Length: 100
Image 1 (cartoon, rainbow, N blue to C red):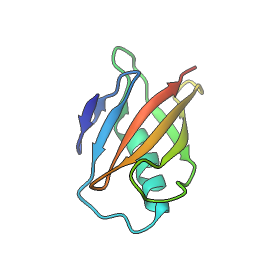
Image 2: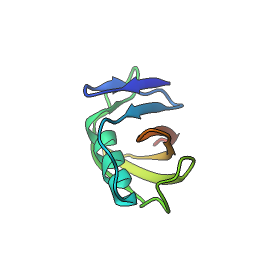
Image 3: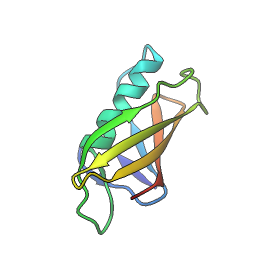
Image 4: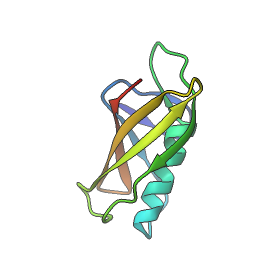
């Protein structure tokens, strides 16, 4: 598990944690932040992977423990799948669940 802040960090095949300073007002905010985080921040250790796009489902709520799915396309057109879990304090955990 790696804590990600404002710079590009590594994410293993398990998870990366994102700490956010802002306040989410809707479930869509979590979806949008997760999409941005995956494209701009997530990196795979030992691999030169760049995510061109990411699309996430909108979470059913903003409650801690709520999970939602994301998919991202890498520079070679491969599809990666992620699970995102909302945590306390405007944080969420992004986990790689499937890779090309």
